[in-house]
Image 1 (cartoon, rainbow, N blue to C red):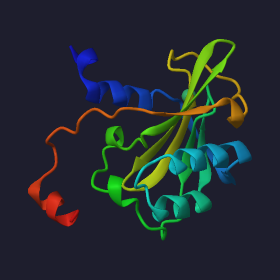
Image 2 (image 1 turned 45 degrees about the horizontal axis):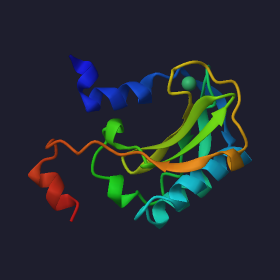
Image 3 (image 1 turned 90 degrees about the vertical axis):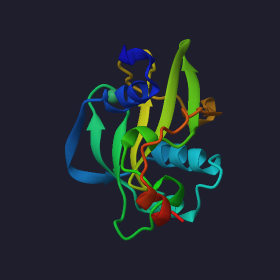
Length: 163
Ligand SMILES: [Zn+2]
């Protein structure tokens, strides 16, 4: 029964979107930049690399069903050390998320990281329904999402590389 497996639960949320590549990357909107900055501001120990990446980030793909976007950052920007150990997307969510209610429906924004780089701004309804627009940033509050305890998947070699 995979439903009770926290690994699978997180992975499904990450991959449910129908992202389509843009013909040309576009700059982030004010809302997108504000949402990312606010989550980083509430992430303990995220460090300066995340902010450097956010300043260079562009949107490379958008979801057909919601405001979720794929992010691409300057490859020369430094990696986020606290999340740089693994390329597993399921472990790459910044724990600070944004929650708002729109017509009594919960809307959640999350920031995903892969290989130590900002990779996706997910803005969606946890119930899986499409989401056409987002409320103003001022309607959102910061909520820290508990991350399931990390399984013992890393190797000794990675341990040494991270120190
Ligand atoms: Zn979506």
